[in-house]
Length: 332
Image (tube, rainbow, N blue to C red):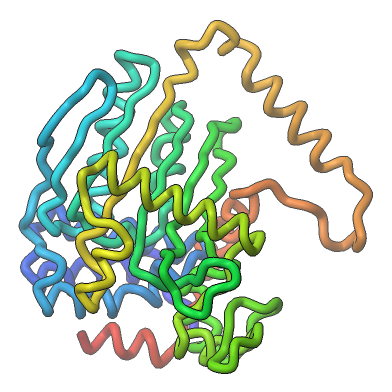
């Protein structure tokens, strides 16, 4: 079935207000969840919303909690999330990183004890549309093994890069696993196998069956040992910069909450070469797209390009929604 942007946002907002969100916070969260859905990131939009409400009811996400600055060191600030709603905290931190960057050229905000930011690319688009380069990442619970290990000790620790590009942006939003767990759950809901191996089953074999991966919580690291190493460093940096909890400490809680995140903004308007940056990026993208194709019907796309096309289609004809999931949400 298809649901319009306005209807989905209205339903999300109503449910959030029923769960002790203020009008303002409900508006922001509802918009973030709906925008992720309309731009095709269903795994961290429509399909993630029921779990978000469940975490609120369990007291893991505190609707009226506000983030606060605890320490500053030049262009770096350390914040406390107070277990507030992850998307709202992340939006605040992104705005603050841009404010610092507007003064110093570069700004960094690291936040401890916050919650899942849902779609990390949200904050890349937020910054890039205002003319800033963005780098951000978060740690997670243990859900990925080091290369060669049977036991998961690493998180899939999503990483985001974003660069302004014309009226839109180039936004890379990726987990350290070949598929994010939200994406794996989406395939499970839709009764589909992954197009490529995405993790390990109980007998240590690579599998593309989402159910098997969700049972073991052993996602396949991107680039095998390289993705595992990058995950480890992202966890270390998020932990020490925010003075927050590591993947190992988070996993002792049994549920993923109280994560550590980092938001970096760069004000490229202050760079000496700013007048030529747009032309430089356009030249790079032009060369990128000039590559000979395996299938002429499948052109290569830069990160974020697909989002623009999906957004236009879903705004025109509605957001595709699994009927059972939508019914579950309506009954929350």
